[in-house]
View (cartoon, one colour):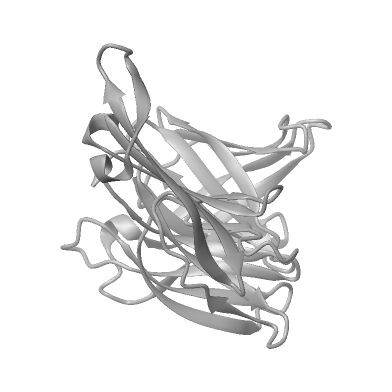
Length: 275
């Protein structure tokens, strides 16, 4: 999975583009006009040296395309066209390669734009990768002010990098304010872990929540956190439900499910059966 950051122009407008291209040619990307810093998500494909990326509207219909007819991974410069798919209007794209994680960045911290933002702020990951390393690591998160790029807050983390979607947003403590989380690690099967940061209106900053658990889901309607952990090829599953009290997870109930060969389904068992 090649992740590369580019900087340059669409017509006369300064932009940044981050691409992530999979071995099968599937591509995801984020670009932003640097005067506004509003991340725009793209998806597309690299086929026979032609990279086509599409920007969608609110109805998930393609509204614009970024096309690079002679795309080469690792090239120092790429040229293409931005096209408004409703009017046919075209603008020239000219971008320079800032760095590619495939080549390593000699242990230095580099920034990767993220697709989500927080109102007046946008987010970047601080990423490190040596040439010898198989995977990149996320060492920090920057929260920056849109339009000015002023650093508002920087948080240290130690996480795996997962494509271009390491950061997500949500209301994790059910207080009506937007928080954010960072993908921490993936485990056997579908199990994952994330780091959760809660917005503190008193300090106008984000603080580590201390929330822990496997594959947490947040039910804002019921104001409950649901944990799901499975192992043994899905034949053993535990779930737990928590409420949030003073920004702490408080266990409400937990359940154990084991695979029943006769019923060909997971059936509830005593908690000790899953230990």
